[in-house]
Image 1 (cartoon, rainbow over the protein chains, first blue to last red):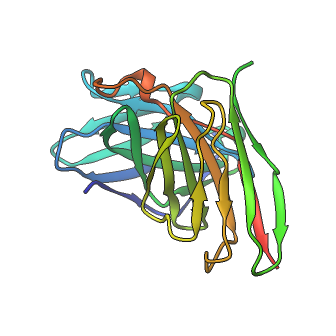
Image 2: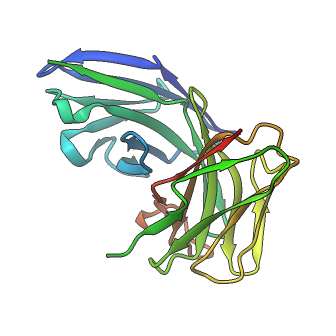
Length: 116
Length: 119
């Protein structure tokens, strides 16, 4: 079965600094990987996804992630943090497609704090 | 605008009571899901449904029940058998097509969530 590990439950960076949120996965099949963002008391919003093709994936709000098969990683980065990036971020791997329904396995989440 | 509506946003329940959380979508999505979120544990799948009148247990279905009588609706009942029901519940949907692999159509869209507190 697939699994996801997010390294660091809390990450704090200064405004303007690089954001790096780490995600490692295990999968017995070629993985489909996702990053979602959650603002307080809200649902999850898709940031970006990797399915096939280019391993560097660009998403919304200036975020990007690189799929590295050899390292089983899918780390999320942003060159310059903004105060509005403060949120919780979830990495997820697809646990398969069951007649069209996609089961996602989520990491435990990383809470990102931006210091002024 | 299309989206997913969850209600109520906040719900308080006494021990021993069943409660039902509503989830309605107007995205014309086939598949719907219920996840439970607890601090530090990420999201865990409770139930999912890929078609009307059919649903499957997820990883933590015990103490929960669902129905899928309409394509747009997927209510979740938290029963008194659920030992630790206090949590944030998220409903999601995706446009599912039989026989296809992952594509943009399989991205999950989430509702804003319902926070249940057992007193």
